[in-house]
Length: 212
Image 1 (spheres, one colour):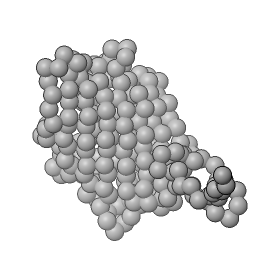
Image 2 (cartoon, rainbow, N blue to C red):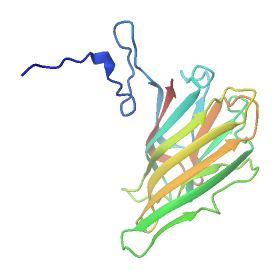
Image 3 (cartoon, rainbow, N blue to C red):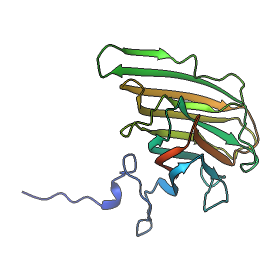
């Protein structure tokens, strides 16, 4: 039986794998570039500020991905949230309009629903945007997910973002939270902050990637 041979650079695996090196030869299939990992340890906030500590958040990439891995609060908390800055982190108070819906299912099988999260959306508000809710400080509780920020350096368009997170909600529930919205500014977004609404981020990692 004859063997079929395929060129290695004919495979595009970047939908599922993050390549942080470059390929040899003339062709590179790299699409996802790791920029910065920040590991929280009793941290009030996790801030990604363009130009600070090797953070790139400018026109180098049109899309940025924040990967949230096992963020765990120091105290029982109402939610894990994000906000944005147009003045390199001096203020995190960009005006936002957002939408939110959640799916949940309890371990006890007494709660299961998919519903619009009317208490978690914003309408022309500078407040922090919750991207997941009610993670407790119990040792095994945490939240994970992804947040995409599109073309933050544009001075023509508003800035869209989308997040999807999963967490262990209070009272032992699987909680799946979807948020989408826009920063209603044509100024460049040059810093992003993550925080719990109460207490510190006891532990967890947030990784920033650029996507080409």
